[in-house]
Image (tube, rainbow, N blue to C red; front, side):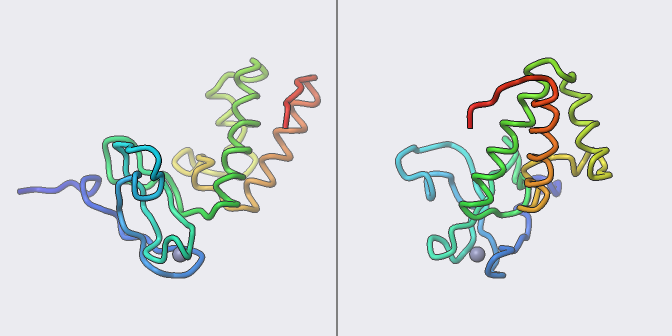
Amino acid sequence: MKHKTKDRPARIRCPYCGRSAVLRKASYVYREKALDEYLYVCSGYPECNSYVGVHAGTMQPKGTLANGDLRHKRIETHRLFDAIWKNGILSRSDAYRWMQDIFALPSSQAHIGQFSDYRCDCLKAECMRVLENNHVEIAC
Ligand SMILES: [Zn+2]
C-alpha cells in the first residue's frame, strides 16, 4: 500500500519544550466538543499547553505548535488582517500579496498559522496602520 506524504503524520517537535508532537483527535484537547478534527499536541500536554490544527482531510499541520499566548495572538492578528479585505481596502489576494511583501515571504509561508510571536506583532502593527489610514474601526 502506497502512502503519500500528506497521508502520514508529520514529525514535528514542540518549540517550547523540545518534546515530540503527537497527532490526536481534537477532542483530546477540546473536551467539551467531540470534534472530528485532528491536532498535533505536544507529548508534554497539558503541562506544556502547545498544539496546532491540521489542514482538513490531511495530516499536515497548519503551522508550528503554539502555546496559549501565541494561539491567541494568531487569532487576533488574523482578525485584523481579514478586516483589511473584508472592508474592501484590498482584495483578499492583494492582501496576501501585501503580507508577503512585508516579510519577503513565498506564498507557501504567508500564513498567520505559521507566524511567530514577533511576526504576529509586526503584522498586527502594519494592519492597524492600514485600517487607521482607511478609517476602519476595529473593536479590540
Ligand atoms: Zn511542549
